[in-house]
Structures are given as C-alpha cells and as structure tokens.
Amino acid sequence: MAKSHRGAGIRELQKQGRGTCPVCSRTGIKLLHEREISGKKQKVCKQCSAALKHGTKKAS
Ligand SMILES: [Zn+2]
Image (cartoon, rainbow, N blue to C red):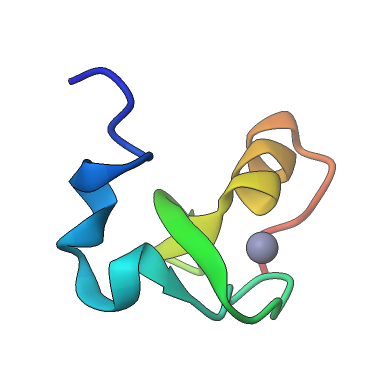
C-alpha cells in the first residue's frame, strides 16, 4: 500500500500513469488522484488534487 503513486506500482498503468490533466491541462503529468469533476470521477494531477481538496480551485 505504501508509495502507491510511485515506482513499480505505476509502471503497469497505461503510459505509466501519465497523461493530460483535465483541470490544468498540463501534459505528461502523472494522473494519480481521482477527483469528482462535474459529477464524474476523473484522474487529476497531484497539484490539482490538492487544490480541489482545499477549495482553492473550483471543479468546473
Ligand atoms: Zn492538474
């Protein structure tokens, strides 16, 4: 369970867990956090996950 977002654990994900974040549209970023965005569960990057959690960013 430890380090589930690092190393070997994410190697087996598609594209090694990387992609384009739907919130900040950064490309090639690790999408490891599931957040509800407009009623849908989506994978977002670490920064957006934290921002949504703290309410500094609105899930549009
Ligand atoms: Zn993001």
